[in-house]
Amino acid sequence: MNSRRMQVLTLFGVAVVLFLGAVAGHAGRREFWLTPPKSDTEEYMVPPPPFTEGIFPCSECHSGMKPDPRRRVLKEEHTNIQLKNHAEHERWCLDCHDLKNRDRLRLVSGEQIDFNHSYRLCGQCHGDKYRDWRMGIHGKRTGEWNGRKEYLLCAHCHNPHNPRFEPIALKPPPERPENIR
Image: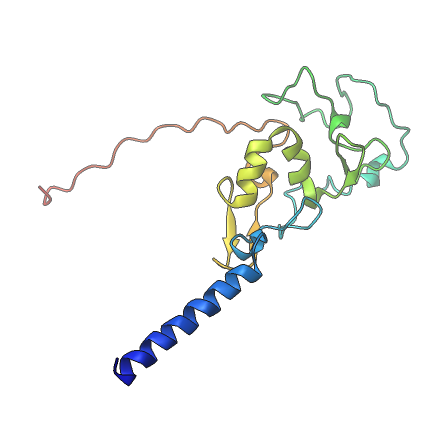
């Protein structure tokens, strides 16, 4: 074998060994291939939730009120909020909102979470969507292809109280230009 060919083969062999060493060093660590956080408690980069103007922090109004956990029709405040298409006969406000700390959400376990972590709350019932959201299949995420990503919260696209999208009116098809055959 001539020396030039030997150099090329040696260089190729070194490159293969370095690559395999890098992959082996990351074996079992999914962040080598995927960028979402490793656990539910690690934070995702999300913009602030889309709160209705003047409604947050909730404690501004609720701090002086005695909590009333009864299911009932709200007659004074939040009358515009109605659960629709979201298990409305089985759900109540306090299934998601914390009874004592209104500036926090509440998981089924009783753990209080910030509204920036609402994806954990939604993911309790919508596990398949949560999995897909974390992997960037469902919802919108932006950022570097091989680096940190910013995810939109479920509430950026879905109204949490009425999550189905409203039907979109059909538009007529585009007209074909006359000069194209």
